[in-house]
Image: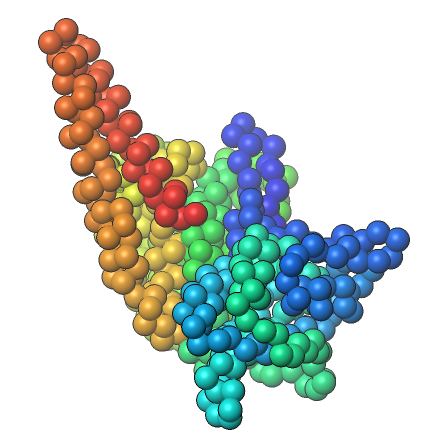
Length: 438
């Protein structure tokens, strides 16, 4: 799973140090782990009978995850007059729970037969460990919603169990519509800028539930301008060909070198082809990103060159029509001047990762609800069309009317007011989208 830590640099931005991670919550919302006192598990306080029945069972005294997954089955009776309200809360609870670390499955089902068919619901869960289950009980959505759901329902039965079979199911052959999507974020970096973009794209991909993400750096010798003592795999492992075979989609990122991709990235795909990889990756989805020395430094050329490589291997590459600010888009992929420092640049990277996850969910996993047009339609109804027509242009005109009297003072003041107005419009637009993300 993913972990966040502070990097000692000028910006003090959190970096991702990971080997492999699956759909998670942002670091500020990360679930706490179970603590212990005198070898007894600390009990999470809640009004829920469900919590009191499960918390503290079969948890190691260290609070670390055990080797065996935990299955939970809760049977509930919900009166017909409360079912609509109860299911609304169940939908909200499940949506938040699916993003938690260690959540393998979390489903609500209802009985089809028997005398209780009209009122009987069953909650079926599987967690990677008891510690992950305990952490679930401490989340805000659990402590807020479950007591309210218990007030209008009755718990008939609750069972906590572990796997009885020692044979594990081979998930590699699992129907693609029943497994998580698989995304590989592959990058090369000399100064760390492209790595920052890769981390943000991984974050964006994980905003969609049921996504597994690997972040990998391409191997190769150091360049003449790199410090040979720096370990390029300090934060992420070197990529292998198995990572490419594993993935449903690849986000490939490269520094812009003379308007093209880096030689290490090119060598990786050349060697992959010579090792038998060419002709084996048809049908996968691809997207590109790059860091460049400055605006207009050839970033879009590098993205298109990277996409040309992916297309030669049978990848289907897509464009992105979204605008994350009045002047900020990423039609051919995120092209960032140096590393992403301002919020618009960071939003571009996350949005590209989210769009990639939606393409995987829709085209690979068969999840119709994840089609990009549907998610964009929902966003447009709330915040205005991509391109920020409502959120940016409306604010631009509105603030222009407010600041227009300054024109009568001096032309110089009017010019400064226009600049200030544009900045405020971008901030208002960004505030709306941050609220949407939350």
